Image (cartoon, rainbow, N blue to C red; front, side, top):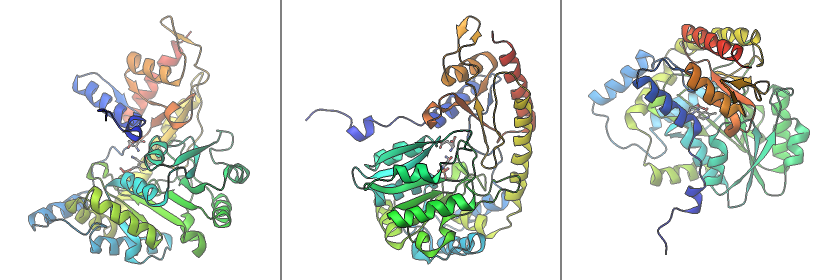
Length: 399
Ligand code: PMP
Ligand code: GLU
């Protein structure tokens, strides 16, 4: 045998978003005046009543392992929350708590995919989906969507992508990076197709609480018993409760899928962090005002950013109705020069903007959207205003 990295792991591309977060943190540490529009996380700290519950759990000595699928009290609170919030009817055996929504997604793919199974994946999409699908032995089948179609695939596109190997579809509404929110009809069409062709829907709803301008987040599993029975609903605490560092998410779905995910988890991580789970109970059962407060702030910042971009040369964007990202169309910048350097791509644009103006953005090649950069508006109003001044001055300096 040779000393070599496995095929699966050697094919994984490290997360560009996390790499960028680390690079920005390092630049800040060096004292550089960098403004990070790359980070996909709320700038708020966790609401005090949630942190207090974790402190209490430590003081009360709740420092032991829990059941692999998570504390029964938390799963009960979750099932109750989903009934109230989305009208979903789950038994506690259909709920699992995970180490972030990330682990729920990987667990779901591992639970349903066999080698060579296909997963429909509308693009632009979050960087981790294709890698996770491949890690689980599956094949991501990309379905490209455009700005003109609001970044939601048509039902004809979806139907044309289905083959006898289609085992699942990854649905992400509201979407990272596009901010698109699927409407009821679009979801109903997908649900009908999934039922007809018998594939799972893995529904990542991590940004569900962050919708704006009257857009409604609809959970596909709430559209009927049949589609509910073949949907794994995934969400978490990171975005709604500003708890990215706590690492906790969850999945609900068919009993056998959740049981398979729990078996995998019992070996992979044992159980999600116990202290964090007590914080999760406080998050789900406590006052939800903190969520609304953050949502309103994100909505205002989104308008601030989009309004400034709409007056800039060479770039454009559309008003997102969910999540906290703006997709900046930089195709008009490609071919322009900065200090004699010709900008060749969105990645090059992002690099020059960072070097020249210390504004970090995420080039979207890895999201399946060449020609676009993702800007996060989960930062303060002042930082948005300053970042937009710098972006505008950068664009004005291009020749
Ligand atoms: N899904 C999407 C679309 C995301 O943007 C993120 C952010 N990292 C996640 C899932 C994972 O969230 P977490 O693991 O922090 O719960
Ligand atoms: N989801 C966030 C983002 O897209 C956080 C980083 C990550 O986990 O990818 O930036």
